[in-house]
Length: 290
Image 1 (cartoon, one colour):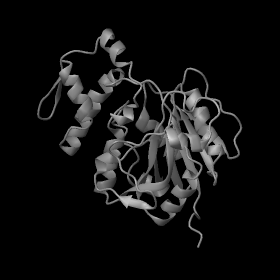
Image 2 (cartoon, helix red, strand yellow):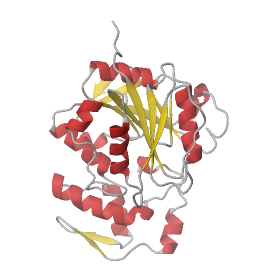
Image 3 (cartoon, one colour):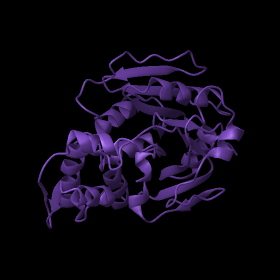
């Protein structure tokens, strides 16, 4: 019985992450079952995106919008894709060799939103040449999201959807309207997508057997560099779903005296200072672990 009869496009979005992108492409080169294509959306990087030749078609689409237009960029990638199945892979992730094949087989069997596991790497774990067996030994699992070793598991908490690595049928993605571009910049656009999928009775599945490795990079904790985006998007999400997203980050902003949360709105008391930005920018933990 042939399961993966549909074609699979891998989609990634990038802004000034050339070294991460190179490792993402290297991971896909090692795929047991190569994707039908790789679509890269360049969010106005300061230097043109360029990649080495790959054993599958690659296309680069550039969008010129300010900041990090994550929702718009993912939608642009989906529109540009030719595959009947979409695998979204964040640029700081490296696909395991089995990921594309396992995801394609599961999407062929399940009309669902499917998240794959991500293992978090430490500094220098994937710098230069690497072997997947070594990364498997070094990678740390997420403390909250539990993935099965094999097969898929239904997850009823839509808030645990993540956009680091997930698959969906292309037709279903557009049935949902894609990511809501009212969420501009960084924050909550992926959580909103997960809740809209649940509202449309699209199951959320956690997938075992194959996933991706998250490349280490410095990040802000809390992500003050996205303060304005997070505050604005949190208010939009609260009005739609009647609870606050990104609660840990908003609580940290409150503790710093930056905001006050009221029942349905956020009052901004002040913007982060340059000193606060410098202090919170020392964390090496991935923002997605927050």
